[in-house]
Length: 288
Image (tube, rainbow, N blue to C red; front, side, top):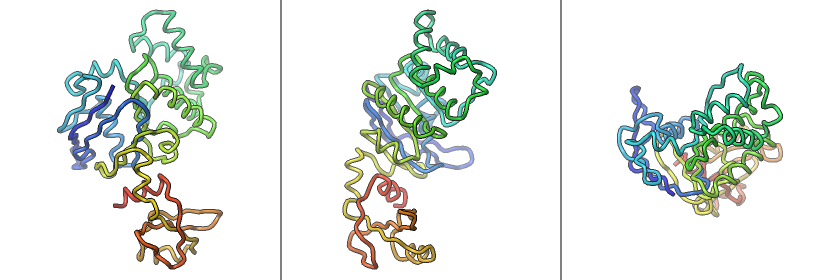
């Protein structure tokens, strides 16, 4: 089972090139798609999900030509977009049952069991009778996850899925995705580096429509090994440091502003070696 993307391109009428000659080979398991807001992640996800056509390139999944056989792909697809709407005056149980019917689960007992299972898996079973309009943002997100899992999809695309989830909900979602990803192609599109670190065996980073890094998280970490340096700084020092060094990020560490820079050699000036993580890889890749 494999998703193969070759030389994909998409330019919108306003001139924005959202996908610039991207090629990827994605096998079963969890695949992390990292990038800042506006990087082209959602455009790529929508194209894979057959919601828009590319200007050039090809997509195949498990023998299906996605661009010429979109209906065949949709039978095998579970999709949670970054933003989705719900009918506010319908209960979660009723709407999920309706969506299950549309997904082709026409046997009543099978559909009932499927709906029950997914509501339990997403921790919504106790509130299944409540109207979706009364749900919090996190609860609506969990409902979105439940509908994406209808029909035992072989390809699952989740776009910024942990937005609005509290730490407990994020952990449950991570566990659920990890379980599903054992025999399914799961693409996790996000700007949250921690989600990819915790979940994904393979990853890519996109920026301004371009693929800037691809591989395993371990391989990605090799690009910054021994080259990340850090020091506590005063806020007034930051513009000076940015002018002198390749500053990846500045953030609070122990309540103190800390600058993290990329340097092949020891930079001096009070900078000390820092173990680079995937976050540093991310900032390095999008700043290149």
